[in-house]
Length: 114
Image (cartoon, helix red, strand yellow):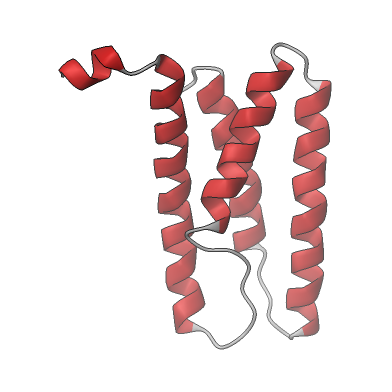
């Protein structure tokens, strides 16, 4: 327990975001391994999305506009991924929605909503 006292609270939040995002990416990676069609993201992409959500929420403070713009930017990239998936005749939007949820997990952890 002494290690928790020595770490800065922001470091603990970042570690929590990376852990939760990694778990989401690990679950999505399992689906990627079983299928032969195109799938977005995995154990590296989802922690990055969570970290982006955390950093934008940290830098924006109480303002919602930067967080909204970041959310829309991630949503736009995920929409491109979904269109790519549709061209490969794969259906389902679960992975893309998981990406948006991962962004929100990062923002919520930054605000202290564990």
